[in-house]
Length: 146
Image (cartoon, rainbow, N blue to C red; front, top):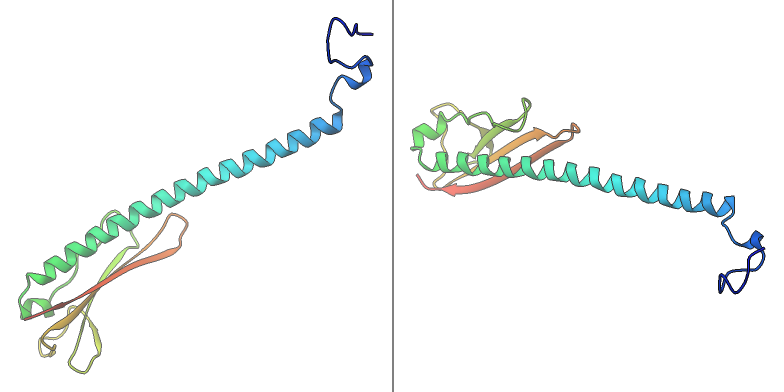
């Protein structure tokens, strides 16, 4: 038995002094769930960072392709083949489309006899698969005068 004057505020009965097995089990379960949620959020943040990095690379390459198209002549535009995207994986593709006078979308390169309006709308699409295999794409378009 404890001496009340030696431990002020402590219960006199030693049976009430500790934690029960049930209390320890509940506290352990709560801490376990907290750790699972914490580590899950770290994994999601890492995936989001990788996805953002690939999207930034794709945006940079998309802008580069549009700038290259801007420097082309009318006949060079018809024969233009976009370079393969780098840094986005082997399945990444770049596609450049122009619209005819009738409004039909044609993927470059096209036949020399094709007639485009002036100004011509040029649409660039880059498509890739992320680390989890999900399909992602980024598209931008601009009007160019010939």
